[in-house]
Length: 412
Ligand SMILES: NC(=O)c1ccc[n+]([C@@H]2O[C@H](COP(=O)([O-])OP(=O)(O)OC[C@H]3O[C@@H](n4cnc5c(N)ncnc54)[C@H](OP(=O)(O)O)[C@@H]3O)[C@@H](O)[C@H]2O)c1
Image (cartoon, rainbow, N blue to C red; front, side, top):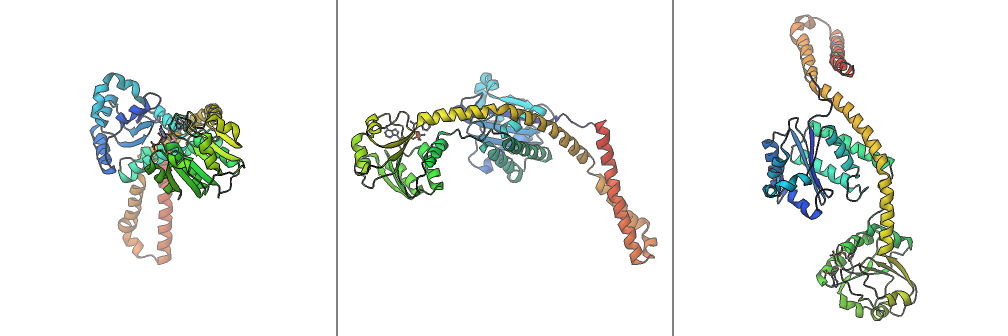
């Protein structure tokens, strides 16, 4: 028996932000309206290319197919099966797809799970996405098997080791989480009055944190009232259009402003209205680019100002810090791939000898119930019990002998 110790058969095809504009990654998706359609398509691809095991991951900046099939696969044909429209790309298709096989496929999977291949290095969300994708392909679609199982098991173990033994995920790099961190450093009470201006993606993310930290007194202002209402509902707050800023009379302690407007519409007149005559220091988190706040407001009022420029600088410093950890991660992963080879080798031997327990058990059963049946009928119950226990002991020992020998032979 020739064991494929070099992890032959694993293949990984991927399209990522590194090779393809994020807006075009969607072309490499399996176009399926629901899970049922996705399952059907994946099973069709699996059968057509004779793939033994398959899993599929799709995130906003990564499409990944991980599979087991010892024979070669025409990668272009594979992606044409994923999406017929890709035939039109023929030339540039090869530049978009990265292809890994055998040990390199495992290594790449480890890197993905450990987030060194991510757009935002150190963002461990990818590990969750990878595990969920595998679970779906395993339990819901039933298109994986033992080879992918051990690969994923070792991938998760390796990624956890990376996150636990390096500082790759430690310092926040998202503007929103840095903004929240700065805001919390001012120790605001949870009954602080919060004004949110803008109800786009960034403020929706900000609102998740406001909810988490239990801010209850919130007013949302936005150009489109419907979106202000949606955001306000999440926080049990009130919603207004931007005009509402001119008449709002509840006062505020914290302002979070982030819109796509290029105008400095928050002028001294509106600010004075919002102040309602209060003169204590206010906190402003300003994430708009460019800022919507008139410089006069910042110059003439007592404001603890958290601005996007400083957050961007912090994000860049923290990202540089994370990048420095990459070499440590790579060292860990190189060792883990060596470990995987050993685990895989042992598993192959166990698989190859999987018939032995059944065969030896059958020999035992035949001895007890056929060959020595008459003789056993004449012995007393205690003796019979002892004989059966001895047979069971022999059965276990006999099963272990050939597996042990095979493992030893392969090490020579
Ligand atoms: N560089 C970074 O890292 C970073 C990070 C965070 C934020 N930002 C900046 O934050 C801003 C918004 O980002 P986002 O992700 O929240 O965008 P988004 O999801 O597109 O939302 C845009 C928001 O701005 C409002 N808006 C757009 N044009 C407007 C105008 N002319 N007047 C008044 N309101 C207007 C929209 O109101 P409607 O609902 O009415 O459309 C919506 O609330 C951008 O300037 C972006 O550059 C940058």
